[in-house]
Image 1 (tube, rainbow, N blue to C red):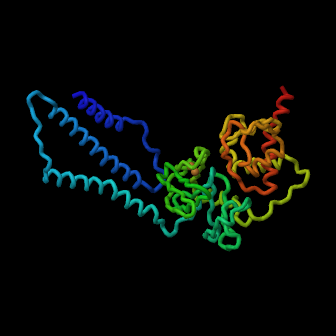
Image 2: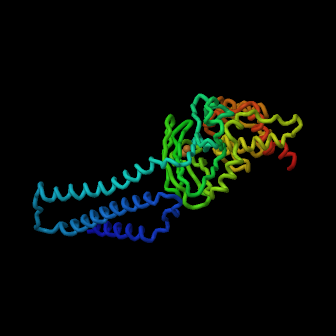
Image 3: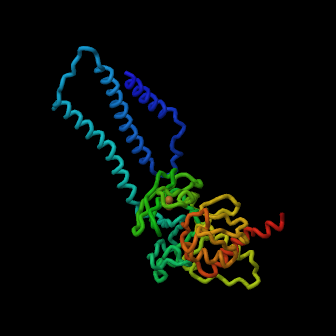
Length: 378
Ligand code: CUA
């Protein structure tokens, strides 16, 4: 009897909770209303069976409860009942699977005039590529990946020269135009997800996965990685800015092409000052993903904070100590697996950097203050 009552409360509570919950989905910002409809159908089917089955259990527990002098009848076979149950279950399963399959078929078949957007996932950052004036994306291969060519684009492919390369985590898209997304991963399984678009797809290393969507609302939407891809996973966030065509084209013009990213950076004069170098290092810390694990405000991260790092004496996991200076920082970045700082897991990935980039990044880390100066100021 108590069991029957508890079940009844669970059923009524669940239905009420669904009706009054404040946790609804975000407003839809793409063409994929079908995703919401499919979810609604799934919820209706599973909700219906949840209520019916539990109320049936409540009824039988109450109706056939133990009473003195009564004996249960044994009836192992009932062909008519079994046919009904098989029929109902079949209809329910079809109702669950069919809408999803039909939406998925549309989801991976982009319209022919769709704008191509390549998204490359890497522990723990996003990079993007858009076609240039030719409208084509050039070929890529893992063996072309280097510090100056992080997307691994084929330098010999003429179609790739005018491609727009975006090494930050924010990409802009034109409003109302279908976007065909091509997903690549440099290392492990990631998943690109923009909740208001209802669009997401796993990114499997070694293959290009694809889906499409049409942004229907202007705005700045947060994108996130939806597969646990390592310790920096929660930091793997980005932004998709949806704006009108003219604003998008203006933004596009400001972005570098693959050909310009390959050209050697203009050498700044020897006395151009460490400010420019540190500034270059700051943007490297962003694009190379360092900021996923290292803060500059002193707050704890996955790795040591860069605030006041220089001049500190760090204790290693093997008990040895080391003074943090230029040589220490450079050696650590070049070979992060050689040793680990006590209190931190040995998980820093090796990141490809040219010597110039390493110098810039080190200069930026130094610009966040040094322990000895801090002490002197106190
Ligand atoms: Cu990439 Cu989680």
